[in-house]
Amino acid sequence: MVIQQSGTESRPTLGIRAIDEEDLSGWSRAVHTGFLRSDAPDGTEWRRLSFEPGRTLGAYDGDRCVATFRSFTTELTVPGGAVVPANAVTSVTVTATHRRRGLLTGMMTRDLAAAAERGEAVAILIAAEYAIYGRYGFGPATQRLGLDIDLGHAGGLRPVPAPDGGRIDLATMAEVRELGPELFDRFRRSQPGAIERRPEDWRVRTGDLSIPGFDWKEPFAALHRDADGRVTGMLVYRVSEDWNGGLPDCPLTVADHVAADRAAAAALWRFAFSVDWVQHVKIKNIAPDDPLPLLLNNPRAARPTQDGGDFLWARVLDVAAAFGARSYGAPGRVVFEVADRAGYAEGRWALETAADGSGICTRTGDPADLALDVSALSSLYLGGETVPRLVAAGLVRELVPGAAARADLTLRTPLRPWCPDSF
Ligand SMILES: CC(C)(COP(=O)(O)OP(=O)(O)OC[C@H]1O[C@@H](n2cnc3c(N)ncnc32)[C@H](O)[C@@H]1OP(=O)(O)O)[C@@H](O)C(=O)NCCC(=O)NCCS
Image (tube, rainbow, N blue to C red; front, side, top):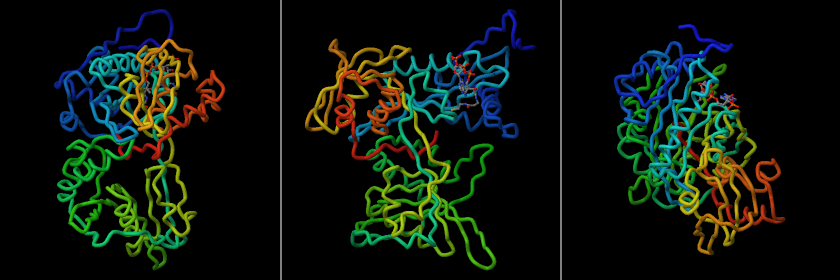
């Protein structure tokens, strides 16, 4: 079929629809094409594992799938430790021959409407490119930081108080599969911006399930247990065996560092820095508030890498539910005038917060303190962005002098949000 690139002749109508399980083969091929993976092996069986009727969209030009989109429901931890149901968007592609004809817009519009209908307070995704999702109301909501720690300069860890009786043991992948989920569940409920890990995520992480086209090398895993034998931390890492003129120069790359408390977290970092032959510890996605660089005697030995930047993007769908679930730094009242082309968050909202950290957000007719697009509101939601910074960037308008500082005190969180997981 010839695709008209210009002129008045009408293009074939491209239908967007929820696919059936038997469409998965062509749909999976379209995902590989959209992500420019010409040599990826067939991914149908892998896709079948996460197939949910109604949640996997495709656009068709005749029989050929030319656009893909999938969503699933997860829990997102918000400031204060509550979780909200979130619509997680993934596998977004449009084949090069069919780009910029509104296919993504069509799929996103349909999926967000369904998410709102299900009562999901927010939608979330990891954006391939910065410019794609702001128009749909998404804003960058968490940051990640990449670190390359030169142990030759780090000077070791400063003494950190450790509880009596803790110990670290290496673990098999089967033990990680058994013990990791409960630990991670405890951790992610204390970390705003974190989401659930599904059973298939654990299988992939531990080599029990492979994603077609992605190589997996078995990592090492170390578990930290407290004096009562309870698992309180987990470090998963790989080491490349590099030698330089008879001297070991092996990088240790962290795949997972999860801890239920600060002592276990520090003990696992200390362990990572103690592995013989290791000269560099590389971390691709560390929480912006992780104390690690400051645990070193020389924090400058932890150099930021190019892996850093925006990570999880959020899109508030239900303002009252989303802002009613999180906690706040100060009591007060702020009125937001929110612009939302899709309508979900459009209007004027009063956020009233109490001294106990709780808050409610309701529609109001009162004059607004701040005006902003829903994408900016979504960037503020988890506490990863500040109001004065968005005012300075022209993304929030301060309608009442002093309102930005006031709102900032309210929305401020003790722990910046972080999402350790891609999806
Ligand atoms: C990104 C992608 C899904 C966009 O699909 P699409 O069907 O071309 O998007 P639409 O036609 O619905 O575009 C809607 C608007 O977004 C803009 N837009 C889309 N992708 C963009 C991009 N990568 N950068 C900047 N603007 C973009 C379009 O120009 C259009 O703007 P307009 O409304 O002002 O005309 C597609 O280009 C693609 O598959 N890219 C490669 C894979 C990828 O990056 N996927 C995203 C993974 S998170």
